[in-house]
Structures are given as C-alpha cells and as structure tokens.
Length: 239
Image (cartoon, rainbow, N blue to C red; front, side, top):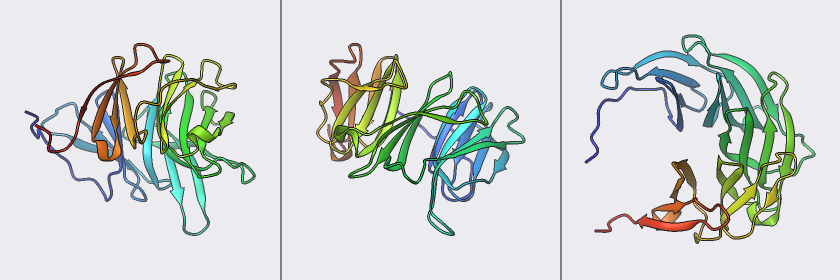
C-alpha cells in the first residue's frame, strides 16, 4: 500500500509539480515556484523560491521550466513564463509569452513540453479554445508554430505528448493530434473512447493515465495511437 514518506511545507497554494533530476519544482500561484531537493526522500528541503507571474501548471524541458500563468488583477494576463533552472539555488526568468490579443485561442489550462523545446498548451474556450504549439528552443525568442483550434478540441483541459502525437483531454472527449510537423498539426480519426475526455493526464511506458471526471481513473493503451484501447478503470469506492 502507498505510504507517506515525507512532506515539506510550501507557500499557498501548491497547484502542480514537475520533477527534474532530484529537484521537484512546485508551482504555488502568486507565491512563486519552489525548488525542493528530494535527494533524500525522507528529508526533502527547499533550495530556493522564485516569484514571477502567478502560475498554476508547469512542465520542464532541458534546463528550462515553463509555467502557465493567469493574472486577472491589475490587467488581465494569460500566457507562459520561462524560467532558468540550471541552478536550483537561483532560479531566473528567461522570457514570457502572451498570445496576441487578436488571437482567438482560449485560456491556457494544461501544458506539456518535449525534450527539444516544443511546447504544447491545452486551451479552453467555447468558441476559441484548442491547442497552442510553440517553439521554445531559441529562448528568449519564443515563436508560435500554430494555434490549432478545431471544434473537436475547443474545450481542452490538458495535453500530453509522445511519439509525434498529442493526446488532448477535451471537455467533449479524448482526441489525438498528429504533431509530427508542429507547424501543421492534424486531427486524427478515432480516439473518442472516454465520455468526458478527462481533466488531467500523464503518459508512462505507452499507457495514458487519465483523471476522467466522475468516471475516476482510466488507463489507456497507446500502442496504436490511432486506436487507443481502454484497458482499465477505477472508480472511487470500487472493490
């Protein structure tokens, strides 16, 4: 059975975490990003705190952390902040990206990053949501490859990427996008195997683990991305 090994108090509120080596980066909204050394799993310790934009979702590629930041006071701001994590004792801002005001591309909700610096953002919006695809490999220059907004993924809440395919948890279903050419994403057929699409997901060893709203946890086999297969699920209270 799972057991609590240790815990460390962070500023309020801890929204998301990304692990890079033996450092866990916890994003805490307006309280900043906290770098926690977990080398000793039973005695984690805070190395540093960086306060920039108020973030709530985070991903890491290379020596860079990218967080989704939303700010609704003193002027609305929805975008991404890139942070240098090469020295966990001294995090530093590298760049920011805000979608153009003229772009009908929704509010960012979930994020994934590939090792080469491609950034994939799930954006929610009844008329304008979808997926942002950006090239973060040339920071401080951050350039958009595409704003992909087909009707099928306008209510996107999270995204995970593996082997040239983006797996999008959208409010109206689970969708797959071919991103082998980031500047020309294409919606793939199939993939509609969950009733709601999920609120959050992660991929590990060819399996997607999806927080599937009222349905609980769903596990999906991605061996054939064009025909994902539901292999298991667990609802709260199930025996």
